[in-house]
Amino acid sequence: MVVAGRRRSIAFFIALGVGLISVIVLLYIGWVLLRWHTGILLFLGSLLFLTIIVGVVLNTTFLVREIRRNEQHDAFINAVTHELKTPVASIRLYLETLQTRPVDEIKRREFYRTMVDDSDRLLATIEQVLRTGRIGSSSRRKLHLIPIDLNSVIEECLVRTRTLHRLGPESIEYVPGPVVTVMGDPDEVRAAVSNLIDNAVKYSGSAVKVLVETEAVADKFVSLRVRDQGPGIPKMELKQIFKRFYRVPGPLATRVKGTGLGLYIVRSVAKRHGGRAWAESEGPGLGSTFILQLPIVKLTK
Image (cartoon, rainbow, N blue to C red; front, side, top):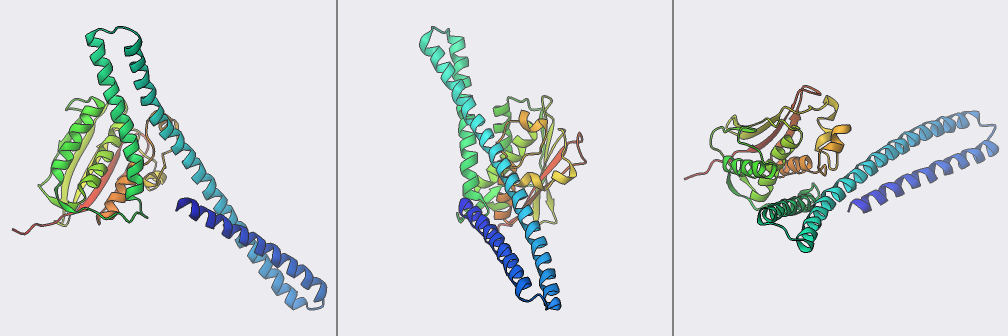
């Protein structure tokens, strides 16, 4: 679908270029044949000028968007390649070590634990890419909606994040609001919550201090707020970061592992469930807050 859309876009601008050339040729012929009609030529010349200006602007816009899209795709491919290659190489190294030399029981258990961690990381990357295709804006996959206790989902994701990143309970503080129920697809809601918390942890650096809290908004929505004390986000990037493959430019993007899909998944899940997602930050160095808002459903007894 994406390739077909890009081909149609390219075909359109090629046709536009051919049309502009045709207009120039016709005007040249008109200048030769209708030289004495100054008024007509003035009108046609003005029309040509406006047409060329519009064409140049459209072509420039198209080229800039294509260049940015290609850069994002290249960054995504590099990130995914790294995320896939690194754990595979690690698992292979440990397996070769176990196969070629004797290893004591303590080291053997350590190797097994590391290989399991790398396998989880590999599966998480694959699932992230597959989920993007399932829940994208053009996806027709139907939601499996059931009543969900959001607080339970958050607690489950917190346990997973602490285990995955080997964090103590003090690293992530959870302040639950009132018990609320949302009508949602469990897999998608869990993925959105997990991505928000993982994102905050990854961008917190070595000193992880994340605050997770929920609150009801006018008894219609529940807001999940995840605040970190990381590098913050420039105002101009607050909307861009939810785009697919997008990562904030800078040295931090190369140090932090990721595919640029996490926040895109969060916003896609929010939209599919009738909610929304956005980010807040006072600027670089002042931390960030990410909000996922979902509608509350009141169950009748």
